Picture 1 (spheres, rainbow, N blue to C red):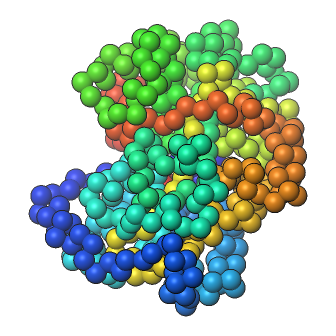
Picture 2: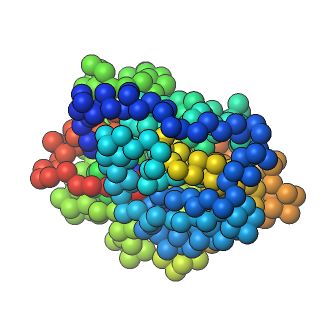
Length: 423
């Protein structure tokens, strides 16, 4: 879904500003002990928690409104959802507060972070922690079994982030027009040659478009160059030209077969789904395993659309929340983050047909009736079986995102770089 688009930190840190960060350190930061959860709950009571999260999806906003209402009733928290158009605005403000020496009165208590934003703030010491793995609900994600719960685009979270939702790239096809959809990038190219103008992808740096590039980068490099997918967990080095060569050869061959011959691209995932709904294309993709079920319920896709995962797997990542180093209501932020990991919140988000969030909790940690409902949802028309979703490819290091976007713009884009929105 489009809310998955990631806003990115595009700021250069000056030497003097970095010195300010190092001087601040954790000065004035009240140290909490999550293992003494009753004490955290007691301190959080009555606190106002400013949760900075993307506000561009009405159903997500409604869900977070319900979360705020429940947090008020259960924990006496005053949760305020600060609706962001671009997460980088919250990052910019945090940087300004750090430069001004504001170590205790920050504007945000909890941030929805992913990828480059987390890596940048963690590297500069602007996050409070570690705390996440000591909250009561964290064991429910079974991080020892699912290592992606401790990695944000390949960067170790080290307890500075708590997971709250997950996503995975899925491909969509109109079964009335496509009998056998392609299940790999080479097969997609062959299919596009046989079905010109029936496929396209959002223009990078739109999040979904860049996700498509990363999927192709990893899949093609591992198949054609024999490198391990773990290679992309490391920062971009001097092998970028070699490792990305199969991607550019693939796109050079694909673009003439795209809708409008690759001269014009959709600007977002919503536009791509609209093209599928209008039958401009018959094959598309999304970054939500429940996209088809959700979109059909909204009347945005016909019931003939089905979804699937490539045979070798598709990109998957987890969205996290983090606490800024200068959050005034740290105890309240921890309580809210822990509540987001509760089976009740996770189940409600998953079962909302217009939201259809993918839970981060292992299935065994839901109540029996909740498990049964989640299993029924996975069997709904257009849904993807859990066995298919088990084929996951982890996100590459954040530096790969910027590198391939820059090269895509140089080769195919032209003009000024556009801004993404959301975490």
